[in-house]
Length: 190
Image 1: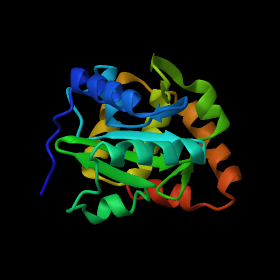
Image 2: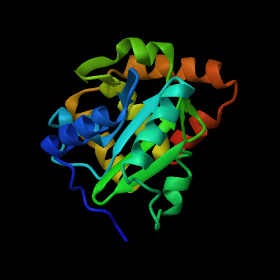
Image 3: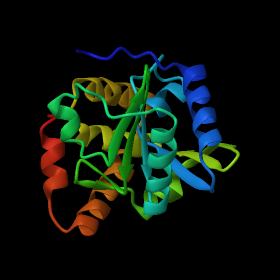
C-alpha cells in the first residue's frame, strides 16, 4: 500500500498545534523532510512529518504524548522505512510522525553545524519547531533511499543547494561517526 501525500501546509500546522497541546515541557524538534519542503512551498504535500530530536527526554515526551493521543505504529511499513532506523513511527488516521533521535538511517547525525544552520519556524506553547537547512535536508534525503526522497532531492537541487557546504558536512559526518557508511548510503542514489 502506497501512502498518498495528504499533509499540505495547513494540515502540517494543525498537526504541530495538536502536538503542542499534548506536551508538558519545552522541547525543540527539527524538521528534516517533506514536511519542511511543504512548509517552504517547495512541494504541495507530504506523507508524513519527519522530525529529529537531540535529547532523549524530548524523544520520550513525544512518544508519551502521541501514544496517549491515540497514535500507534503503522501496520504495513515497507522495508525502506525499517532501513531509516527511526526511533519510532506513529500514525493516527492520515497524520503521521517519523521521529528520529540524533541520527537517520544509522549513518547521518544531526550535527552541531546542522543545528546552527537550522531556521526557527515557529513556537506553539512548549513546542519549538526548527527546520534544518535545505542543504541538510538534501543530505537527510540522500541516505533515506526511497523513490520519493530522490524526487525531493531533485526539487532541492533545482531550488539551489550549496555543494561546498554539503561536502563540508560530509566531512563532519565522517568525523562524527568514524566510519564511511554515510558515503556508501549516498552511493546507492547515483
